[in-house]
Length: 94
Image 1 (tube, rainbow, N blue to C red):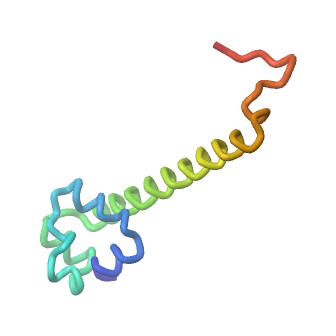
Image 2: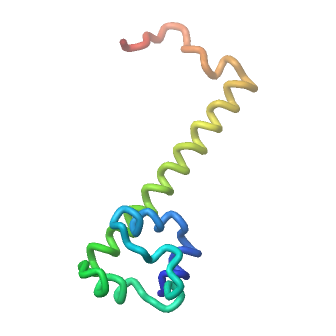
Image 3: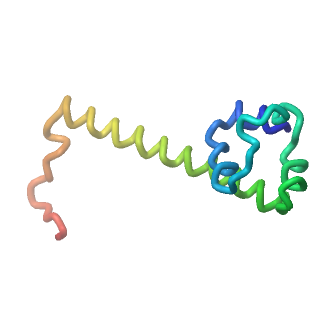
């Protein structure tokens, strides 16, 4: 898969390249280079680069899921104020 296709499918993978100060993002030849070629050009192990890309994608997905969940909780609290009330008899740990 080329860098261009990777970034089109997983835009958050851009973070893996930026963290490593790789010039792949916006490079005119990203349309032709694969991860394997880029790893070789930059002298990085392909497996290390692939793990960095996977991590960037997964981290973004987790943040997105967490943000969506928090947004949903906020909306529930707005519609039903009792959602934010502790049930009677329960004690909040401090």
